[in-house]
Amino acid sequence: MNRTYLDWNATAPLRPEARAAMLAAMDLVGNPSSVHAEGRAVKSLVEKSREDIAEAFGAMAADIVFTSGATEAAALALRTRDLQSAMVEHDSVLAWTDGVLSTDAHGQVTVENPADSTLQLANSETGVLQSLPKGLFLSDCVQAFGKIPVAFNWLGVEMAMLSAHKIGGPKGIGALAVRRGLDLNAQIRGGGQESGRRSGTENVIGIAGFAAAARAAMRDLNDGLWQQVAERRRMLEDRIRIDAPLAHIIGTGTDRLPNTSAIMVPGWKGETQVMQMDLAGFAISAGSACSSGKVKSSQVLKAMGLDDIAAASVIRVSIGPDTTKDQLMRFADSWLQHYQRYTQRAA
Image 1 (tube, one colour):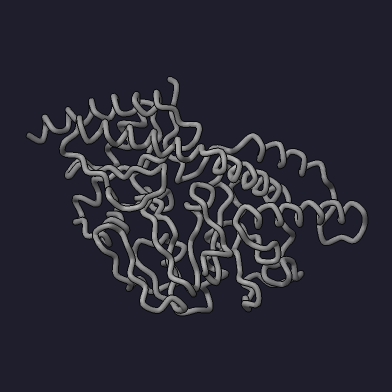
Image 2 (cartoon, rainbow, N blue to C red):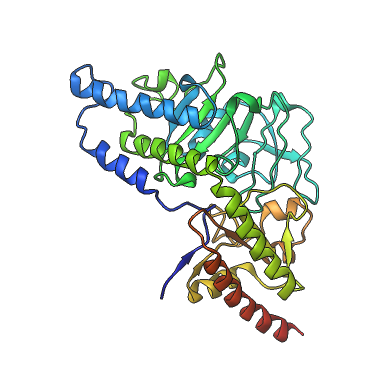
């Protein structure tokens, strides 16, 4: 069976550029903290990678602190602060914050005190984009980076989280962008790496892959590939609206990521749909990958006003530049067959 991957928000396929950069980094033997030639060569690679990632994110190289991923970046930023958030945030943010900010039916969050709040730029489940207030303490930019134009220098936030594997880099590497002059209380202490902000020998292979993916992601964005993604998503959603009148696209009428469709058919369990599509050869999800497998309704959708039944009836289809129109139409054909069976049973 030829499988079709439609779960890019969970993780993007590894880019060939990232794979090549990682293989090349494996041949470097030195420790980046060593002062000999081998160590300096690895240190040079780390710092060039930092510059490339910073340039792709519209930041300065000194702003970038490498971490093991966005979850660690969230902990590094939030563990010593008492901040407000909304329930649409990722679990890695909600673990450290008070989810009291109000969210409307369109997924838009109201922030009254930006300096004491955190707000994501894009939601992983619905694709809904937020308008970030100036002076915001932290923004989760994981899903937005590489899919829409975004620059740390004009976002006006104090800190921002990034993750390599969402843009086709390796898993297990991410970064926290920190506004210059802002004090950061290190969570991992020891050798003083990352200017004392995150100790431990750098993940050189992961960093090299991250930088290569960031360069490629910016090329795709500048070449208009994500506009093409948005057009293919529109075609899929139009097909579903026409042929599945009970279906509702979450976030319709709101600015969203170009690749994300959250589809709800009341009463048709999302986890059932995921299994049906998996057997048919299509990889989709029923929400955030970090929440999958948990027996509970999506906190994101409930924050938007959906009841438990509706929130448990949503699937997420998230695509990328490699996703073709033919793949999406074949997915629609298969999904609509199951939809017809479900509506016949429910009648």
